[in-house]
Image (tube, rainbow, N blue to C red; front, top):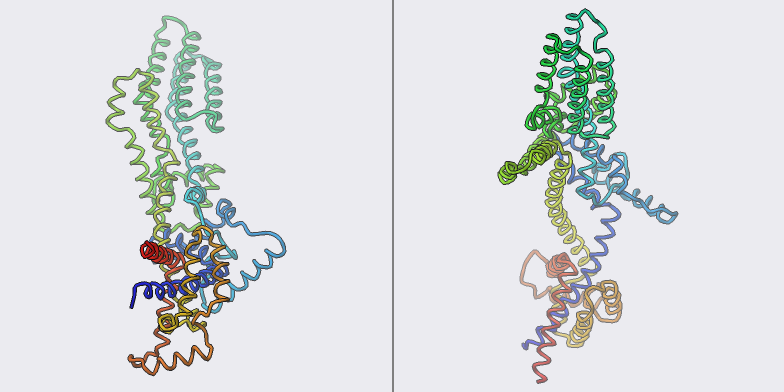
Length: 513
C-alpha cells in the first residue's frame, strides 16, 4: 500500500467530511437563529452572573435581569428588522420559539418580550446596572444633603448664636442685620450653583470660606473699633473659620466626610446600612429626589448575591483609587509648592467618590463572567453539532466505514474525489461563499458513496455479514464516526484538507525532479 494511495483515500474522506460539515454548519446556524440560542444563552449567563450560582438568589436574579433588559440602554441593542418580509419572518421566528418552549416546557427567558440582544458590551451593561441602582442620583442627593447639613450645623447655627449674643450684649437687635442677610443670600447662591453642577464640592467649600472672609471684613467695618465686644466677636469668628477648613488637610478631611464613598453608595441595597437609613431620613424631610430613589429601591428586589458582589467591587474600586496615592506621589508632594500640594490632595480626595471607577470594576466583572459563559456556549454548541452530525449521517446514510471501503476499492471514485478535493484545497480560505458554491457543484457531479440507493445498501449488507462486533450494526458504527467527524467543524476539515493537498503536491514535485 503506497503513500500516494493512502493520501488519496484520506483526502477523499476529509473532503466528504468537509462537505457534510458545511451542511451541518448551515443547519446549526438556522436552528440557532430560529430559537435565538445566542440571545437566550446571553440572558441566562447574566442571570447566573448576578445570582453567583446561589440557588436562593436565582428567582430574584431572573426578575432583576428582566428589569435590566427593560432599560433603554439594553433595549436599544435589540434592533429588529423592518419591512413586511422581515416582519413576517420575525413572526414566524416567534411562533417557532413559542412552540419549542411549549414542547420542552422551557421558560421564556425574555419575560414579556419576544426576543433580546445577542451581544451586550460590558460598558453598556455597567451603565445599565448603575442607572438601575441609581448610584449617580443617590450620590447627588447625599452630597446636597450633607453639604446643606454641614453649612447649617457647622456654620450658620454657630454664627447665628454669635450674632445673637452680640446683639443681646449691645441691646441692638438690628446689629449686623444687613451683613448677615447678605451672607445668607450669598451662601444660598453658592449652594444653588453646586446643585446645578456649575461648581464642584471643592470649589464650593473654597467659596464658602471666601464668603465668610467677606462677612468678617464687613462685620469689622460695621462694629465699633477698640471695643471689647467687637474684639470678642472677631475672635469667635476667627475660631469658627479655623474649625471649618483652615488647612489643606482639614479641607481634604471635610471633603471626605461630606462626599459619599463608593462603599456607601453601593450599601444602599442593604436595608441595614447607614446609607439606607440616611436616605430614609431624607424621605421624611419631604425630599422629592430622595423619595423617588427610595421608592424605586423598595420596589425592586435586589438579589443578595448581587448586593455582596457590588460591595466587593466597590471596595476593590476604592482600593485601586487609593493606590494612586502611592508613596512616590506622597514623597513628591513634600517638595511641591503649597498650591500644588492643595490641588493634588483635593484631587486624590475627589477620586474616592468617582463612580466611573466602580463602572470599570463592573465591566471587568461582566467580561470575566462572559468569558466563562462563552466556554459553556462552545461546549453546548459542540454537543448540538454532534447531534446534528449524527442526524445528517443517518438521514444521508453517510457510513464512514462504507465510504472508506469504497474509496480504497474503487479507483475511479477515489481519483475523482481526490481531484475535486485538490481544487477545493487550492481555494482562498477567506472566500467561504465561493468554496461552498464550488463544493455544491462538485457534489452534484461526483459519485459520492452516500445515500440509500440499492447499490450502496447492498454493499453495506455484504459488509455486515463479515462484521465482527455483535449487537452493534456496522452501519450504526459508521454513522457515529461520521457524526463525530462532522461535529469537528468545517474549518477544521478545510485546514486539514489544505495540509494534505500541500503534502501531496510536495510529493509530486519531488518525484518529478
